Amino acid sequence: MSRQVPVWQRELTRAITDPVELLRELKLDPALLPAARAAAARFPLRVPRGFVARMTRGDPNDPLLRQILPLDAELETAPGFVADPVDDRAAHVAPGVLHKYHGRALLIVTGACAVHCRYCFRREYPYADFHAGVDQWRPALAYLANDPSLREVILSGGDPLSLSDRRLSALLAALDRIPQLERLRIHSRQPIVLPERVDEGLLDLLARTRLRPVLVVHANHPREIDADVRAALERLAAAGVTLLNQSVLLRGVNDSATVLAELSETLFSARVLPYYLHLLDPVRGAAHFDVNKTEASAIIKALRQRLPGYLTPRLVREQPGQPAKTLVE
Ligand SMILES: *Cc1c(COP(=O)(O)O)cnc(C)c1O
Ligand code: SF4
Image (cartoon, rainbow, N blue to C red; front, side, top):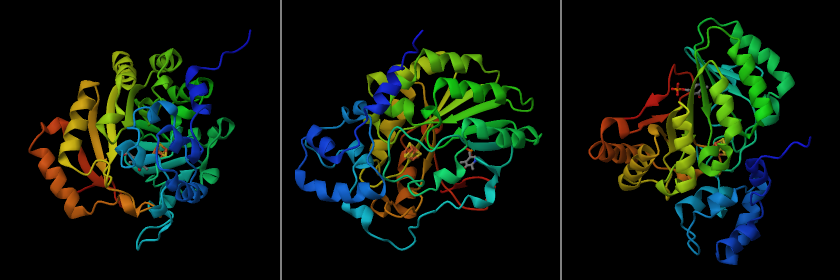
């Protein structure tokens, strides 16, 4: 019997990686090409076609496009913006395991993502060193099994839903057997950028685990959530998965209370609660996305005046050595 390639994996291979094609598809000025090529040489362009379809043709400032189009500005240096802004080395306790906070450990299961977000703090991350392949999971699983204080395991990456169902299911089965674990958290942008990923195979996997599943998606702008994404999220909610969202505060994308309020409303209508709004990690090449702390505070204050508390994300930033993410007021 021949094994069928799932639709989502076909879409993943069809993702746009050539700046020429992206500009043509979106009817953008070819003058953008040399910069796009130069910046993509550092961190390649990658975007699923379904996500491109949500962008406005001919608009170089489209908030979805800004998140994925390589620009000249990425080649500029800025004080304080470095290759590895979130120094996780101290928290790296076993191959592929980051254990920073009480009761939960984060597993880096792959370096691959369906989309390359230009602001990503891992754009220069040495994934190869940290990547835990299916046969390399043993030490990571042993670490988890040996810490009785752990209640939750967080699958991260990269994007953990880049793994095939076969590999995911092997991993979940192993996690199921660690008795002190109660919750399985998955951090993934795929339900947003590649809603095809939420298929029967994935829903079956989540239904089979003994652990309570939490899925934290990543959307930054309300227009990312179209009818297909909404349907995917509703399938997950119907399967009993707790859905949360994290965003990054990005200049030119969502740096206004109006956009963020609409994002919260749209997320809620798709059964997702806002969780974190992150200040940008100062990664080299992303300074043009930065919103400073004073401005960020003003935005979150305005947001709090418009939305119920449960629809207002917590504004946070990552500070090495702290026992939790740092709340920004
Ligand atoms: C952000 C993060 C977590 C999760 O933190 P929560 O506040 O529980 O969402 C866990 N481990 C690491 C290493 C993290 O960076
Ligand atoms: S999906 Fe997440 S990990 Fe992947 S490039 Fe985007 S922000 Fe980075």
